[in-house]
Length: 436
Image (cartoon, rainbow, N blue to C red; front, side, top):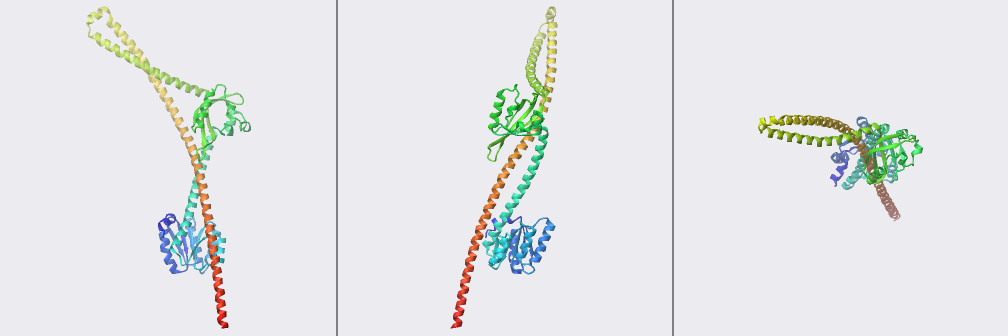
């Protein structure tokens, strides 16, 4: 008895047990209550159907499993199964019977029922049947949950893509760089129609001011799976210049093999480009200011030391030569010059900090959105692979069940033939007895 491995699949499932034999109910109910989360009992076919309908009304879902006897009053097991399969064609049903009737088995198989238990029920066969059936149910539930989750992710990706699609220039290309997709904003900005762009290289937008080394670096990065980010100057069909902040991503399959590239670009202006150049100059100025400030402070320290040295000298001698006045005037000039440097340094630092904060906020927000898009796309692709594998596994399980049934059918035919042969022997013996 493999209770532990069976319980792994049955512990969260519900079952309806329909049986008119009180001894059988008492014997099996205790085992079922150990295995299943919910166990409801019915005492004939009519009662079973009522219980089945009440459960759905109360819980808004059907039983995961139905275990029913064949021979029962007020609707037998076959009639009950027919009605249940009409209500819920995906219902899993296990039929238990004391008879090995080929005709009845054929009726049940026609309904799609392939799980059977024969009275008296053997312990091993009982647990194996419930384990196989419950495992399939759990796998189907997992697939359903993953499909729902996948659909939600797809919806979220569609919403996110729709948002980006309205504000960004988006294009896709094959491994050779030929355009395979463009959005409306791409066409609007470039001045080309979609049919003019598809199949063309992105070089169709290349501006003469852009050096070839930039595009060489782009290909070096994206071919190795890296994301390239940078500024590009493009030229439209009407020879109008436009600037973009470009983000070019390699798209991978489930085996991390690059299958295409996607480019997401945001329009910028020449003024914004100049602002970025200004930021670069601010950084350079800031560094130069720090160097100048260090030199000024050193000069002040040297002058202060010189002043202290002079204070130790006889002031009458200094007054006669005017050295003190000259020294004080030099010190004031150096302090004034240092103050100007400090003001300039403070202004530069504030400007730099403000520009850096704004740039970091923009960069962080864009990075988060794009990273989420790429990760969701990877997750979706991986889940699709998992779904395919699980479906293949289910198909293998179904083939295995079909083989088991065919084998069982062959055994039943052999038994039927043996019984027929025995009947003929008995009839022959009875006839011989009568004649004698």
